[in-house]
Image (cartoon, rainbow, N blue to C red):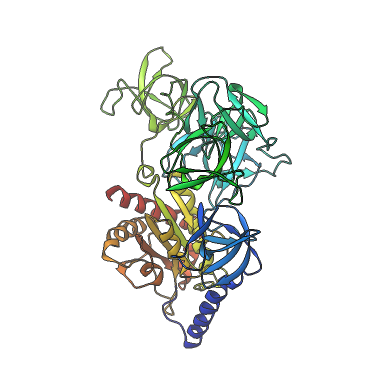
Length: 582
């Protein structure tokens, strides 16, 4: 963000900014747009107070009829058109602005070193969940960012440092095979875990019981990707029987309660369907199938009909997971790891184990493993300093994740597209640096369980006014706009944090203190400023200037992968510290 510019450059910037804003929506005319948020209101006219005539869902594509200001008119059905906010959709040829996905299909990963640590998230601040060796095989590639690769193999899933692996060419077959249409699975055991990923190490989302039927939407090896109550998860195929066609008559996928004054039951999953009945608010219904956010219900008279899913409170969820069992072993990650007589750090050390040693688990006590030593005796080791193997529960001492989980955070990579931002001493574009930092931060926050949104995930133009509006729309717990600085005086260096209102001073102090600790740049302090992205945001907001690229030395520093890693980690830790106290 340049502070001083020649007059002709200022004029040029003003012109391009206005031009960009005026053309942001008009460029969408005669194109299709993709919805980039979960549910988006379609209104009768281009006004936030206008009547809602329909709703559209994330990922759905619609042709654009007209564009006006920050609104676009879309053709919802052959007989219905309405207006939506342009900043909550993207042109169908671009990536979504609401979340980033950079999954690379079914590549494999070759480990280039021994004792490669697998971490629960993309950063050294995340706990170690295991390790790979150079002899490890069948390591599946899941995702990557600039410095880390997400992998799955040998019963483990996590992130490894990119410099120690080689990503192999993609295989021809798809990792997740699409099942035939209209398949369902009947559960053949009680207490079957529904997991977040197709792995026994993945988070348990809930359980299913014998006889329960669920929709099958995909397959990965022995695992079935199922859909229940609008949420997908994975079950092991050994404990379910897959059948063709719709679930058996009377099979219930779940229950829901109508949450509006009156809701039409229609003959088909569309607003064009014939209304066959109307149900009042509070009515409980049984859901037997789902399609495109519509729910097929079984009525008391035995007939079936369709309800708009966005007007339902799906309040029946899978039951809580049963207590985990201690089946497996622990693997020592560091030399001279203390093995103690009791599950406390004050207990006597009875043995010191070295890296790579493996011990069977007897049981789990709080966040300690009780293990059997080679002489047959039993002792304890802290669960957060070792890796585990098998189906046993993994233990990690809660770090920043506990404060970031479920927080809504919007990250704004400054500039983009035609707006390159500041230009460094050797020609570096600010827009490229801001995106690099933002994508690294995005992955860290997602790994901690936060709900994260990006104003852009590629080199695309986003009008300045739309950036804080995305944070307002999602009612973000924090809005972070990332920038790099520039000035005519090339001797100026350092990082600065800006906030708008007094209520954001604590957020600014926490994040800035963390940046000072991690970046090792000149501390230029945190201060109030009347920037548009801060002023127009109704959520706690910061604008971060992470260094001066007009200084040749600092430009070289901030371009490095090491700096990008430290900057994203610093923001992550600063946010965790803020949420810890707020």
